Image 1: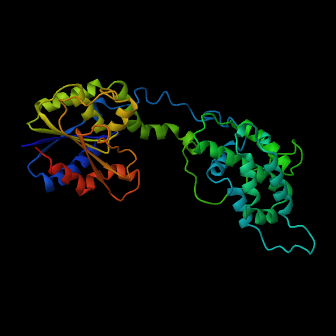
Image 2: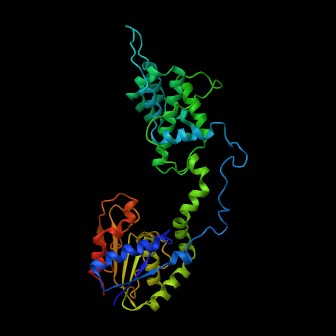
Length: 388
């Protein structure tokens, strides 16, 4: 009777392991009814814990003092900028949506004529006004001058408020471009606000010292609150919830030998032939253990949604450095990945003739796709067809 040793992924602890194991057993029953399923609960023994009850997690700003470390509206302003980084025209859209019907007298200038002219002038003058915000001001200003939102916003807002809204839109566009381009250094809030003040004055606001124009209350989709005031205030709870997954990876890469030795000991007690079935980090553990020394009882390795190939290619796999070949004692390797799973990687191109890839499609978006393997019949078919 073949023994299938199931090696779970990051963050899995009881009672979830029992639930997951039941699902895997049900799937195996359809394609490998004679197989015996055994779980390697490495998470419960060797997984990450917050040993000092989260003492490394800083307190939220102002915790215990009854006040924020920033200004009175520091959190709200930060949330507003987060929205603008997602959509630099969010304030303009809000203002434009609130514009009522307006009749311009014959011969009078339209409300948006002057701001469009000032934006075109700013585009022609170029980068110096943006300061620490990074390159791209000319393109951003020219694009904003053509925005259809500007007409409605100019009708709804007074000239000074519109100048600040336009300045923040330009600043947000430049910061967002830096985020998209993985710019290694981003400006702080003080430098950003200084650049916004310069831009606002160039766009018609009174000289500095008269205020910086509060952000409008923006409509639209809710913010993704990672890095926001919400996340900062709830950092302890969020870390406590997330640390098993992130901590498991970090701990294994730093001190994984106990985890590998535990798997060796389990395999030694299992009835051969043995198949190692590893999900995510479990696949890395299985691959690493097999590379680090022969386990004659193991006749098949099957990794599912695993990052082992990626770690190998980047030089982070503990047991094998690229371009060293897979040792000859490693058994046949089947690597399953869902095309929509951003944490599943291909092994075949890195180990031609030694690793066989099976691409599946759960029709689920990421990150659901990373956990949908165990309800996918294709995974169990791939295993059942290759069981020794």
